[in-house]
Amino acid sequence: MASVLIVADGDAAVREGLVAGLAAEGVADRVDGCDSGRSLVAACARVLRDGHRLVAVVLDNKLSIGGGKSSAIAVRAVEQAFGAARTGFVFHMAAERDASLDRILDWLGQAAYRRRSVDGAAGDEAVAELTAAIREVAAS
Image (tube, rainbow, N blue to C red; front, side, top):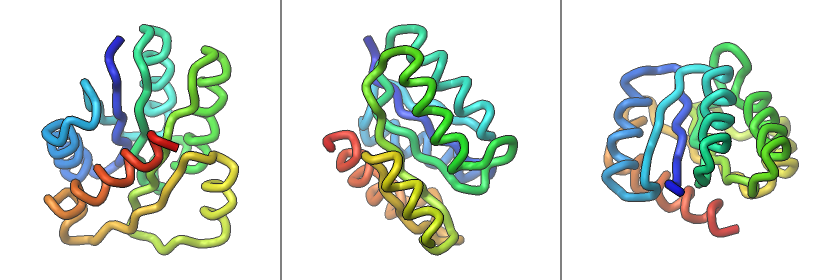
């Protein structure tokens, strides 16, 4: 059974940079990327259907076709359908944390927010910060 981390971001350059950086950090056996909320939910279902362990999901709130918050809620439903353990979520986004996001983070549990910079959204500093957040939510 492989451990899988999924990065969901609509910006291809950011997504690919984070996938490569987080794979190099070894936070999971496999790091996959998704470009929309729909593809995130489908990817999580495939991972669980194939008997793998979903370590965490790193996502932007501004995903097309579903949005980040709604997609995270849908992933919780997929986990329940497969009888899988709850995964951690790290919202990695340029927007400030607000009351709406706080409610989602509380509801999800095992969830964190990390603000990303416009310039270094997929740079070494972002990867290091996300690696720490992933380990934090995966351990809780």
